[in-house]
Amino acid sequence: MEDFKTIARFTYPSDYAVLELVLQQNEIRYVFLNETVINVLPFHSNAFGGIRLQVHKNDEQKAIQIIKDLDPTSDLKIV
Image 1 (tube, one colour):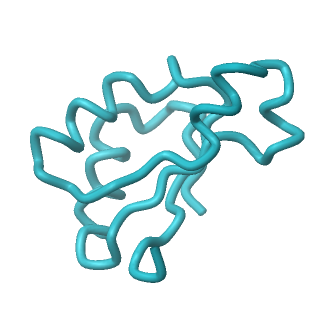
Image 2: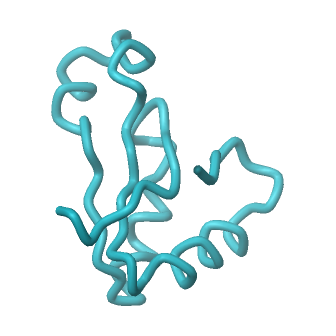
């Protein structure tokens, strides 16, 4: 996981449903950290720091551009 970098944080899995499909279609290597625990304990999302989207360092710029293209006014936070 050392080649992966956090580029966005989400509060709930529904916040990134469409983004996940677009990442898959573009063959971006990614992982969502804390996804399982927040599915079980959704009200503890902030305590865990949210669900973190990590992408491979070689896919970082492409993934950031995908996020910007999806909705430039969204609540996604680029880290």
